[in-house]
Amino acid sequence: MSDSPSQPAAALPKRAPQHVPMSQFASQDGELLIGGQPLTRLAARVGRTPFYAYDRQLLKARVAQLRAALPTSVKLHYAMKANPMPAVVAWMAGLVDGIDVASAGELKVALDAGADPAEISFAGPGKRDIELAQAVAAGVLINVESARELAPLAAASARLGLPARVAVRVNPDFELKGSGMRMGGGPKQFGVDAEAVPALLGEIGRLGLAFEGFHLFAGSQNLRAESICEAQQKSYELALSLAAHAPSPVKFLNLGGGFGIPYFPGEGLLDLGPIATNLLQLADRAARELPQASLVIELGRYLVGEAGVYVTRVVDRKVSRGQVYLVTDGGLNHHLSASGNFGQVLRKNYPVALVKASGPQGGATEQATVVGPLCTPLDLLADRMELPVGAENDLVVIFQSGAYGASASPAGFLSHPNCVEVLV
Image (cartoon, rainbow, N blue to C red):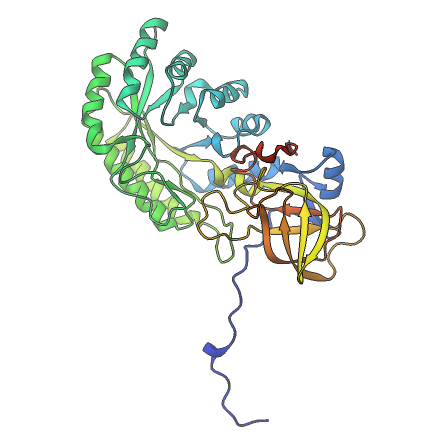
């Protein structure tokens, strides 16, 4: 045995960050199960690739997980912009307390899905007069984002003979720290600047609109529980101070969401424990300080993101100067966010798997780059990832694809066929 000193730990090679295991999906004989079905069988049932598949039992389980963690007095709303597929919205409408929409088109889907109009809220900048009138007629809650919206709301109320139900979306003077997408603080197109809200509340009262409360959304895709708790606390304090200027008691207080899911190597799961404790404290305060108000958490990505996969088929395997390329029949035209062109500054890989079309799963691996069929170098689904050796007809699976997938992608780009979506 050598007497030489051991190598310092700092000099050992560092392991590259890894993706969080996609353990939400079971497997059978080494093959991924989606909705309880082997992926190759599901692909045969769908009839063609590419397609998105959403697992309804995983959606149900995520809502149940939140119900178990959060105070029973806090309502859970689904922000359907994350995934507006009608079957998904109909399924979610039976699980959550309400639906948040961002257009008249989404409003139609939510109403068709059977969502209770009393528990639908409509947010978003640039609402057209006809959309505002539709929302008034439907009896949903309209989150006012600009003083300009008040006049057409008042006109629709007078014409239809019922006061518009309104809340004020507030642009706070703080941001959600560590947020993947900041939607509050500083100058923003979203909501009414906090300092301008008292005057707006006065105008709402003068016009006789049915004021119900406030909507605050500081940011999204956050994996730091302490940041989410801080934003919720500040949002509550701001709403409490603004309530003193309101024409009637607050009935609705949407504290936003921001709950993130892990997409990239090195990211971990969000810890719900501190958030649940924080919300319990805020709910206790609200019972005393805003006794008529319902606290609402609005979540989209966190509810549906981990329950979906995007599946595309290898149509060509080629080697260019030593680099293996697996060319698939779908790409950024269906899954813009996985390509890195939907908010990423430095592109990172989503978790990806390769499922053999025939024969046993697993086996030898190789470093491969997965690209789509589009004539642009931006069409990149996986960059130099370690995958099973791929061949024509194999299936490539992109995990974490239940949110901001098909509806957030340029499906018409280069006129390739649209993808299919299924709920299984």
